[in-house]
Image (spheres, helix red, strand yellow):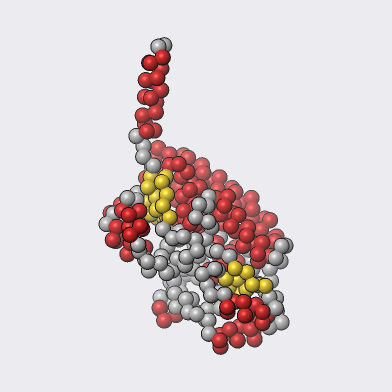
Length: 296
């Protein structure tokens, strides 16, 4: 066969691939972005709206967000009202009908799993209320693997040509998680309990049966008062535990409580790094487990 015919045949085989543009996917956080990166690889062009050092409860819609959302084929959010203060506004301003809630281009992680603390009161006087359930499911690797399976189906719906790849990669991520659980469970058994700033560690503690000893916030989103901190110290005096908080939460109160109780205080980000894939997400959880278990 002449060389030019072989060359034409080669490019003819490439045409279907060249004609398939990567999905434009926007993730609200680095944890949802991690799932997109792990499942989609080069099949998606990914933009992440919130950096990992920010509180997802409290952001503002910015022009860069709107540009990303305007071009998006899919938005992947945590949901359960975690981004309610800014993401719906940004989606509305982007005027992209593909990504409106209820359309295939909008996906919430919270819709794929059972949530803890569901059916709470929807009274804002009680702080940052989440009646659908606690939204901080990204701290539970098992739920994140379940979300990955559901997200793979949504990606397959939007991009059928790569459906098998999405499903294979989601199953592989679930397998990675399963391989870590026994060791993590053994190490977390040594943690007597955790006093957190907010209820953002709820899923991690529940997954490994670690007691939640309370929160420094008297109600979600309300800063701790001196009276509330004294009550916590009086109640927990003479017991063992760890005080945990994140870098965007004020350090003074957790450090003071830890000192009063003679406990360790640990501070780590809730979200994995901005460029995280599945392995980096598991390394992120490993840092939390190492910090809480104190080397156990």
